[in-house]
Length: 160
Image (tube, rainbow, N blue to C red; front, side, top):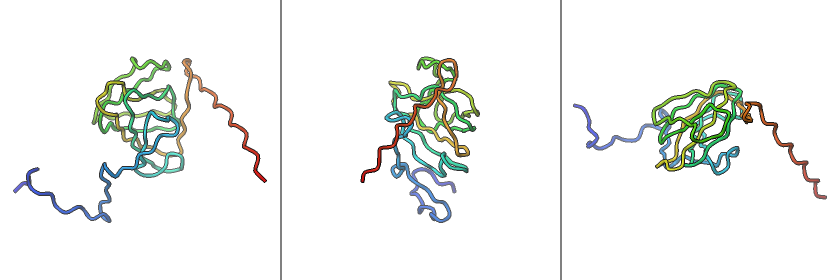
């Protein structure tokens, strides 16, 4: 006999055999490279360290990255909402293309792109992104040339 969605749920799985996390328990942090535009939650690993990693990005409506590329391949699954993407070096949100829940994509190595969530979208865009670390992000100008990083401010003198 098949169970239906009207039958009561079974006991939660043994966490030693199938560790799981409910959506309400996901810890979202503001993405440091895109303040106020996206939140990130680590699923496993760390994109700044060697080895595999996976993160969730939650793009707030009306927020986009700027044209950039990564030095390593990254793979994406759209979890919910609409994730808008472009491969143009020109930042113009009207150039973005919609990918909806269930779509997959790949950020190819050194391939210029940018992405986010359009204003008016009913929900944030949530993507599952995975790859091999460490990975770096390089922003580019309209000619596709890397934008030099701003020089770091000198360290403050130590107090005596």
